[in-house]
Length: 167
Ligand code: FES
Image 1: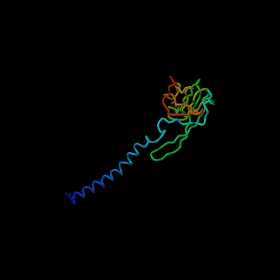
Image 2: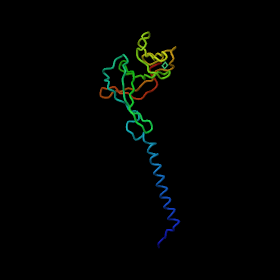
Image 3: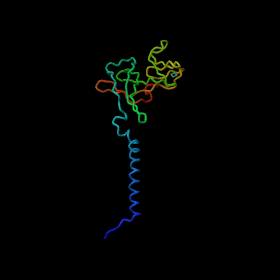
Image 4: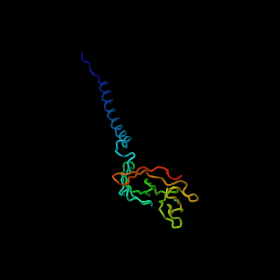
């Protein structure tokens, strides 16, 4: 027994096939775009290796540069940032240089009248060595901290998080 396909059925099948093909053409790139970060290795929680040896770190905060890739929609660029890093006994502390008042950059020992503090030149904000904001100066929160680690004797820097040292 042979079944003949009517003209109406043939058109229906053809339209469904073309419609499915077009829907897949739209949905696949959208799905890939949404899930893209999950397929990238090391995109989450990755530590950046710096050019500074752990053994060279001192108790005095030092400026340590590090580079990372920043993706802004489809544009990828390399960004250079830095942290103030020092040794506290066996621990390595890395602090963000971004002032918690209005975002200027803080300097270690930047104010000769208040030595051994971080100083923000924009509105004279001051912080203790552990990043704690000094009451009576504009910043209302401590400097953020970076995760730190070691890889082959070199300092690694990770994600920024709220300061856990300043109490
Ligand atoms: S931005 Fe640092 S004190 Fe205002």
